[in-house]
Amino acid sequence: MSVMERARKITIEVPPDLLEKAQLASGAGITQTVRAGLQLVAASRTYARLRQLRGKVRFSKTVEELKADR
Picture 1 (cartoon, rainbow, N blue to C red):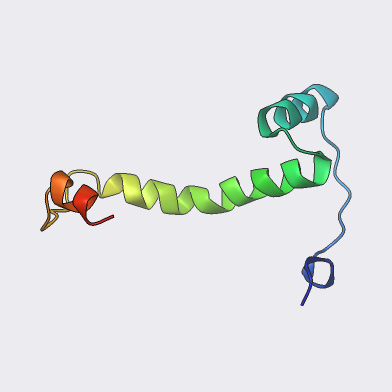
Picture 2 (cartoon, helix red, strand yellow):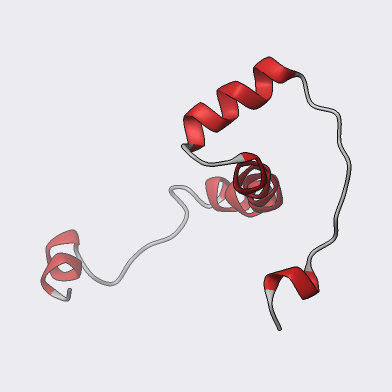
């Protein structure tokens, strides 16, 4: 299934300066920039949950062991 078969076409109003800043930051066109922004919003909950685990997870390997395992 291609992206176009799964995608929804939407109409949104965006302040021109915000869109320009976002496109400069992403280095991409409008569609790709909007998709990237939506992916970040969708992932934000996961990032928040990961931040809550900071300092609470113990690893069985040292940093040196993890690097050597590449």
